Amino acid sequence: MSVVDLVMPKLGEGIIEATIIKWHKQPGDTIKEDEVVLDIATDKVDSEVPSTAEGIIEEVYFKENDVVPIGAVLAKIKVGTNYTVTEFPQSTPPAQPVYEEASIAEEVPYQPSHVMFEAQPTDTGKVKFYSPLVLNIAASENVSMSELESIPGTGQDGRVSKKDILNYISTRRSGNSNNASYAVENSQPLTNNYHAATVQPANIQPATNNNAQVATYSTGNTEIIEMDRMRKLIAKNMVDSLHTSAHVTSFAECDVSNLVMWRERKKHDYERREGEKITYTPLIIEAIVKSIKKYPLLSSSVVGDTIVIKKDINIGMATALPTGNLIVPVIKNADQLNLSGLTKKVNGLANAARTGTLKPDDTTGGTFTFTNIGTFGSTMGAPIINQPQVAIMAVGVIKKRPVVIESPTGDSIAIRHIMYISLSYDHRIIDGALGSTFLNAVVKELEGFDINRNI
Image (cartoon, rainbow, N blue to C red; front, side, top):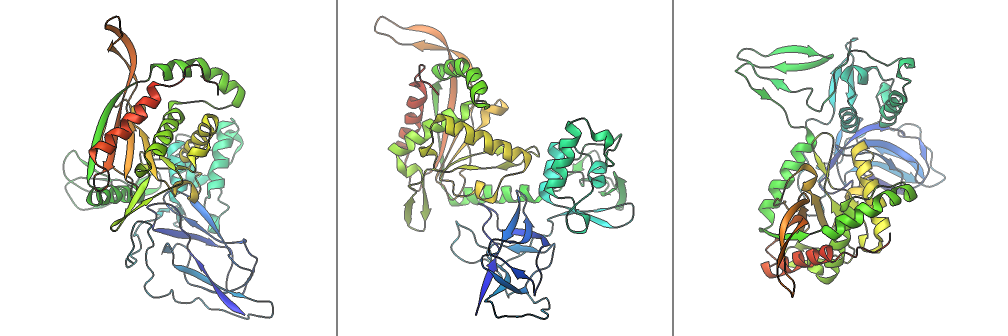
C-alpha cells in the first residue's frame, strides 16, 4: 500500500497557476491510470488532468474555481487492491504551496490571482462562470454576450465548455443557427473588455449592458479598461525580461527576391496538393534553424554563472490572438523537419492559437523565438527576448525597393524585394560580433534561396 500525490502539471512557459473547473472524481472514488480526474483552465488553454496511478482517491485539497499553483498537490491517490474507503471529508490544502517556474530556481510564496473567470449575473440572478478560453473564442468569433449566455452548457452546473461554444460556432457557420434554441437577434459583439469601466465624475453606478454588470465612474472623455489576466502576465514577463537580460539589437537588410518569386510559383500547386498554404514563416524558420546549427550559442539559456546550450532546436513563433494578446507556440525539433513539415507545423499551431485549441505542451520548451512584425505592416522593430532564451528575431514587411546591383561589368539599379531583419540578443553571453555574424548568416541563407528547389 502506498499513497501517490497528484500534482498540478506544468502548462507552458510563463504559466504559474490554473483554475479548477470540475472534479470528475471525489474522495472514495476508484480511478484508473490515465483516467481524467479533473478539468483545469488557464488564460491560454483548458486541459484535463489524468491520474498518474490506479487506486482510490483518498483526499482532494482544492475546490472547484480555486486558483492553484503549478506543482501544488491536488489530491492523494491510495494505490493498492485491498483498500476500502467509506468517507473522506475535504481536507485543508497543504501549507504554503509554491510556484514552479522553469527560469526561477528559488521558491516563491503562492498568491492566487484575484480574477480567473468573469462572473456574469443572469436573468434569474444566478451567477454564470466562463473560462478565459471560452471568452477568447467568443471574442474572436464575434459571439455576443447574449448568445454566450443562451448556449446550453454541458459542463459543471451548466457551464459552457470549449466543446459547447465550438459546436455553436460550427452550427452558426453552417447556416442552421435559426433552428437552434440559442440563436439570438440584435446581439452585440463580445470582447474581452466588455467589463471595462467607463469614467464619469460622481459616485459609482452599476449599469447593465447585455446582462453584464459594468461599473461606470465619472470624469471627462476617458475610458478605463482593466487588463485581462493574460495581458497582466505578458506585461510582467516583458518587464522581467528587460530586467534579466542585457538587450542589444542588430539590424540587417535582406534581398528576398528569390524567396518571393519561388513562393509565387509554388504556392498554388502546393495548396492543391497538400491542402496547406505556404507562407514566408516556414521559409524564414528554415534559415534560422540552419544558422543556429552553425552558431549553437544562440539556442541557449543562462542559469546563474553557467550557459546551457540546448541541443534540441525548438523554435517559438510569436502569434497574435484575436484578443490582441500574444502567445508563442513552439515547433519542437524544427531541425528534423523538411520545408513541407515546417509548413504543416506552422499552419497547425497558428490555427490552434487562433481557435484557442493549443495544448499545454504546444507552448513549452522553446529555445529561440521568431516574430513576423511585417504581418502588421511594420518595417522593423526591436523585440524583447522571451525568457529564458537569449535571442529573438523579428522580420519586417517585404517591399519593393530600388537597390544598387554590383557586377564585374559595372553597377546598376534594380527593383528588388527587400526585408529588414532584427535580432535582439542577451549581451551577457552574446557579443556584438556573434550576434551580427548570426544575423548575417540568416540573411545569406535567405538571399541564396534556391529558386529551382522542389517542395
